Length: 186
Image 1: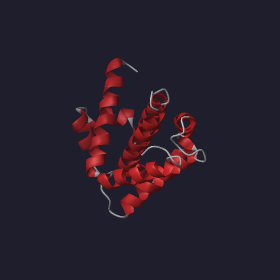
Image 2: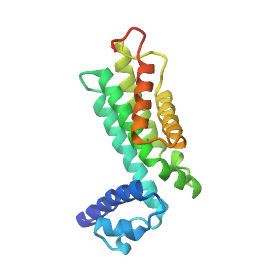
Image 3: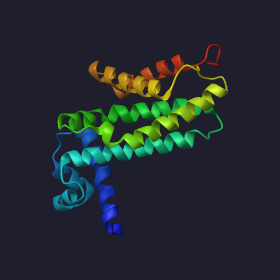
Image 4: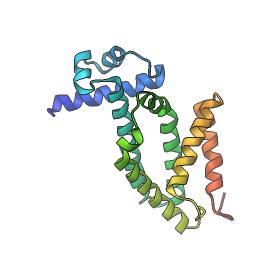
């Protein structure tokens, strides 16, 4: 892609993430285009359907989470790195649940479409966990799948109970406490 096309694509993704987070997935595409400062035709050249835009947002966030997991895996404080990542993951999952629902309603299996990124995310989480376990801060019977399941389940439960982003963060605190190894400093 030309440099201007790359910039337009990123502006569209950034604008769409903001619009869908504030107005929901039913927000019109022209609102996204206007916020991005591009025409609707430009938006559709990059993303031929609304679902393609949803998918791109989800994939971009997955890539960002993978990068965050890998960056945290080399942090000086493994416990803090793991729990900071869990907080970030929960915040992103809570903000993107409606995109997953919309993709599912459209018959798009995002899990299979993003399988490589999901595998990379789980590998990054395993590295974070491994370092936190090695320093004695976290239980040794938890895996990346457990973390993913806990975060997604927690976000779904908070949503069903009408919870706010603050309630998700409180639940993250409870989950993190449950991940600590017996006798770890609190």
